[in-house]
Length: 329
Image (cartoon, rainbow, N blue to C red; front, side):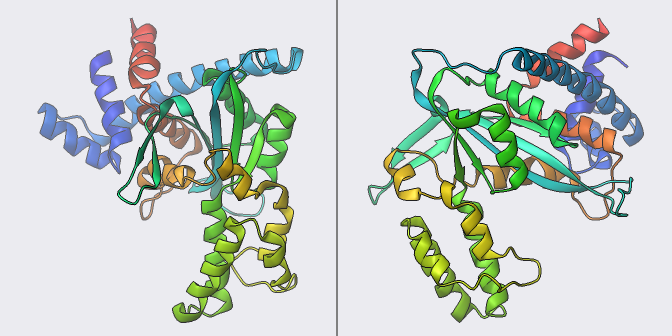
């Protein structure tokens, strides 16, 4: 198989919802027959090469960091570098020590104010759209994922912007990673999109899915939190009141109280919850890896997820095509 043919296999493998659909698409568009197993092998070969190169660069960044921690430039340009990170599970063929086959994929997004388009809608409200972002996906431990986050932050301008913001869902591992890599140089914000989701989920459980009760209740709590009245919200919650499949809302808000000063963040012109990480999990993980009945080999999923991330980051030509021709020629 030529390099060009392998790249076609890799592209359609990450673009379609299954290898079988990729086989159909190649036949329709290129008028050639390549079976789904060959497509899987070709995509795996290329994805492995791309992923291993990313790991090499991440290890290099980590080695330099261990020698000398990150230092910001004395004269930093105006603007903000945003880092968003989250986890989403993928069903694998390998059981963990608890017997579960689900393994968490850790996803990070990097974008800056240099690539945010702003406009006003008919109501005069300022709207913003992220026009360029980089995704980094890692199906494994935090200890390795943090190296990729470090390398991604550096690639996207860490140290050159006057502000750096980390948006997250409030998970402890994310806060620990932020402290280890960036310390106080990064402002951590609890993504308001995630906070709102948890408030509504809690409200649904509290009022047994009665929309006439949980919607106004959740609307009120979210408005107060958006206005910085988190103490008032905590006073209205019972610390001991918990429901199945929801967070303990009192504990969740209380443990993140240092990261929910939304009036101040808004006054600074910062994103407080774009929903970017949530939509990214749908783009990178759910669309391709969580179809009904899917179970993955960990390596197969990682290599393909790397290809999906490169395409969505608009890095296909530089990081996939160029690397493939370098390896094969």
